[in-house]
Amino acid sequence: MTKQWLRSSLYLLLAGLLVAGCASPQPEPTEPAVDPVETPDTTPAPEPPPEPPAFNAKGNPYVPGTTRLLNRTFYFDYDRAVIKPDDLAALETHATVLRNNRDRSVVIEGHCDERGTREYNLALGERRSDAVRSFLTSAGVSPAQIETVSYGEERPEDPGHNDSAWSRNRRAILIYR
Image: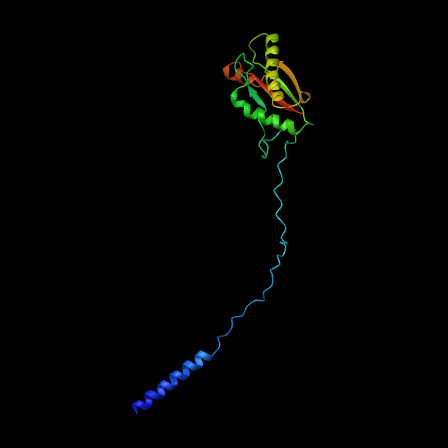
C-alpha cells in the first residue's frame, strides 16, 4: 500500500506540474502604443507684479524698483563744494533716473550757512550746485535737463546758530520737475 500511495502521490505531483507548466500566464494589460501628444498648458501664466512707479505724486523719484524716495539733499563740509564719497551712489541713481526719463528736468539749489558775506555765500552755493551738475552731466545726463540756482544763506534748513544748524544748511537739493 505504501508503494501504491507513493505512486499515486507521484502521479498527482506530475499532473500538478503538467497543469502548472501548460497554463499560460495571464498577459499583463498593456496600453496601446500611441505616441503621446503633448497637450498645451491651458493654465494662464501668473501676471508679474506691477512695477512700482518711478515718481511720487509730487514728482520726486523713488529708488528704482522700490517705493522708497531717493535722497535729494546732499551736504557739504564747511567752506567746501566737493561732493562727499558717501553721496556718489545716490547721485549715480539720480543720473540713471534722469537718463531714463528725458522728459524730466531738475533744478539744483545751492545753499550755505549764515557765516560769510552775502556775496561769498551766493558764490559758494553756486559752486555747490555746479559740482552736482558736473557730476550728473559726466554721468550722461543732458545739460538741457539741469538748471542751477544759488540761494546762499537765504533759505536755511535749520534756523539755529550753532555747528549742528550750520552743517544742515550747507547743502545742495535736487528739485524735480
